[in-house]
Length: 259
Length: 241
Image (cartoon, rainbow over all chains, first blue to last red; front, side, top):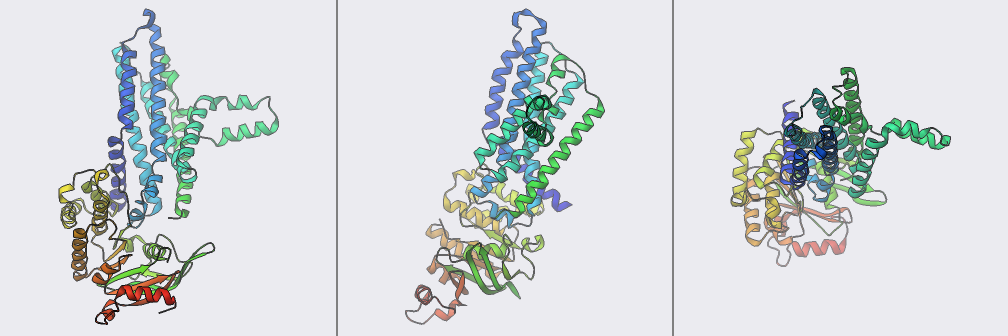
């Protein structure tokens, strides 16, 4: 256990150092501040309710940035190790491929989650500056958003073992974005089309990661309050099970990968 | 005691026979140079020794065990030919990372890091990002990471690549110092002169087969017969030893 922990800490620490020393996070933070500060000061048309639109824009930005960071982090976990040949000294050390992959995943997931938390702090600040209040729903929204990040990192990690880096970025980000916006409507789309197409749509609905399950933007914006605890638990279990399945498949592929 | 024991090992990749029926033994405290032209099977042999790939047939044992097991790997240090180590880290952080992967105690890693960085001549550049390092400096960082776990067996792939003449001399001294401390060293190289100066044993590969194995001292004092002559002779003959 001590060995496992030391190895995990080393890999997770590497991910945080990478996040802090790459320019991506700072560029996104600067962009977020540039957009959110004017938003937090705006009061369009003097209407109090218009603040909801500002929240919607701000939260959409947070989701977009988090997707960018999570998919980027997941897709960068292994390909640079091969390209830079650092995979050889790493695999020659006393660590199994499964453990290495798990550590890499945890590092990317935790560092991306930390970035998401930072964006939510900015969002909360912009809400408070406009004289708004923060609800319990926001806490749930953050928890679900972090679970989404965990899912996105696992999706792009698996993609990085199958596709080329650019194809993986496009496919992972495209699939997650499509599911985020259209996932809940897939059963509707399956109605009134040919049976073959309906089968494909239903298969996508059953197998694709449901990014929309983690989206609580509307509840936060409209002040609907927190969701039922049972629903939260089910969504959390869905995320954990999905991530575990993706990691198992990734490990199986990584173990067979020629070095 | 045999630190490396390869018995009739072969490795194929589809139709390509990278290594054929290779038998090699390396005793504790010896330095073996592993020579051969490009594509002769040197890297495949090293990968089998590290447990990164398994032989199609035959057996590879390192320190009496399967090189894929973590307990064996914990006693092996490996430096690849050229690795572009994490550019956003500095040398101290790099060694700290590898120390964590080896599950070494933090204080021990800190202590060894300072000693090793001084030994490989990177003490003054310890906090510089690796992206600013030259090829030779990256190679030296690679040597330091390979030595971090105080390995019984050191496996080096083309260790002289990128090293300037002074660094080569220091490297040679370091290897001799390690041998005197009882370490076993196995390295592949195209540098025949350096190999002759450093090694106790040499093995020459051609088309996946070992065409020569023997002690370097046998070459001494035979007039024109040096390692370069031998290398050319055995490659020209191409037969078994």
